[in-house]
Image (cartoon, rainbow over all chains, first blue to last red; front, side, top):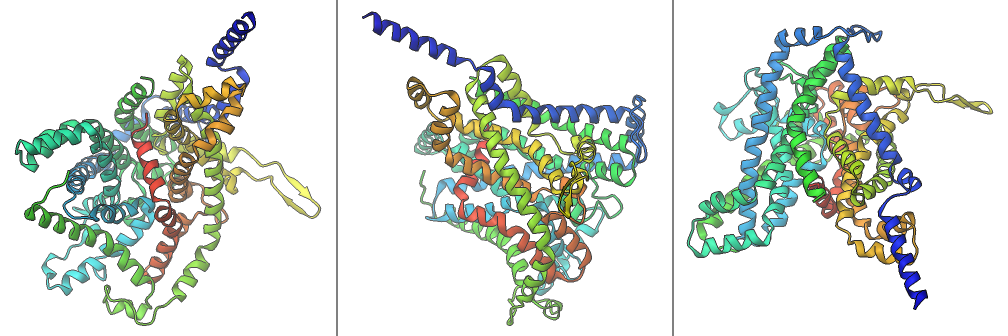
Length: 310
Length: 289
């Protein structure tokens, strides 16, 4: 009797100790991650510091000088053009992608033809394995105005009047770059929305709405969309961040040109830092990109935090 | 949900047709063109495959790209392996600990995985350029004494710093789904936390490791900003080489397309063979927590 109670007590104590982590365990499990996180935030702070200092040229200069480079940045015509281009990316890179993805995910859900789902998934999802550099290389050639694939095909179909100058026309070049982004992220978006559809409650709601004789379009707008708010919000956040960070497409297809018609902040940051050697200006642009990203990332992380520790 | 309706079927078919054209055309034209000679390309019949397939294009492109491909392979595999190891450990902590420290850490990690690389680029290049590999001489053969930026270690270390937090969160998400009873049974038998992790959790979580591995590998293989900043002739990655080929063989579309196809091949292969894990990884990353 006493032996049993002692072992029970012993076991209970051991459990309790296990709820915490010994210092050794803590180190083994966490040391590499902690090093990475500390380094990342250290570098983040350094970039903030550099952006407030006066580093111009090759030699580092960490003397704090205040908002000098920020003031200069906001007056630069190129910076203003970048901000307006970034806005185009944020709106046109995200909104059409979400709407088209919602439409496709819904059609797949209806499953009126057998076998369409796997086919469509593979068809539109393979670009997630591609880099923007590969996509950009291929699309550069599609867009090429003279010998390019699109214009040649249009001429061949007798639709020569539809020929475009695509990325060589300063007025529309950014839009054609955004098309590449949407093309690349569509499959990704469909996957995320589809997983949001797959809850039993939602499936039951759709069934009963169908029995009530609601039209399929109304079901989409009034039953599905409100019930997958969470999934849509996640998708919008991810797409916003990705479109904010895009610079590879710009680099490989237009290199910011013609002029700086397709320039974006993420690209100008590189040019300012490594070509113009205005390192403090480059750091400042980096900070602006970071702050813009925070508007999306912070609420998203709070949302994830609540789910994680609920 | 299954609906029979002829109008709807037509709508589905039209959508499928448009999607098929939009997604097959670029790849189809790229592959067809990569197998043509320049003379054939100037005929501008882009949709019609060549009658005499020019496999030499691939030999030539591959010869150009091979050194860079080797670099990318070394970098991607080592970063993936180490991220899985460190991320698995860290992710396990994040999924099990419920202390205030763990909560703060979660927020810091959560924000850090979405840091735009631009905001750490300047200090990162400085740090990597300031760390020197100690010189080593073995007989007549010596190496070291150069900054990390001039070796592959610069890129490996940088990618590692950026990908360990991501791997931790992905693995943490998967670990959260593993029932605690499994560990508790082992604990009663006297297993330490470390034994528990390696003997009980890791085997169960192998599919999760596969998903995380594919996500990290693809991301590192396809990364361009750091690859561009750290590029030296010896440490060029495959993406960097592709850009260079595109720039120096301006009118040689057959070469450009062959190089693009080669660059795409490895991640695409992973996607086609392990697509299920790929999708799971994407979902874990998207709906993290």
